[in-house]
Image (cartoon, rainbow, N blue to C red; front, side):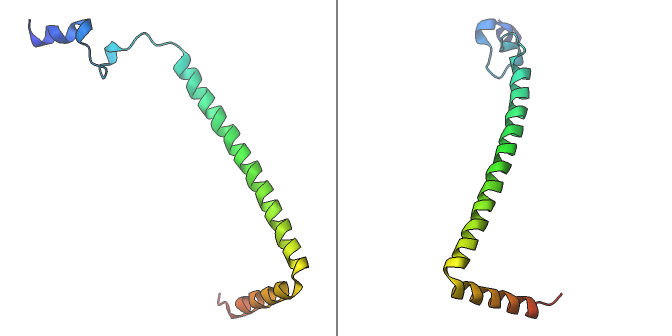
Length: 88
């Protein structure tokens, strides 16, 4: 047998050979569409989680400022000094 005949033999097909795959059905297209929808949902969910995190962080900072007024005042003063010495 010649080398070309061996390659056409169904028993000797390689996994990388595109002809060795079975018949394609529509599941690949549906899977791609599902991935896009999942990505959009996860992106929206990520944004919701981020907004909630930032809201809670802001609340925690306000609480800390109320509980530790001296430290909060010192931090405000340092921030004002930074802004005064900042050069545009």
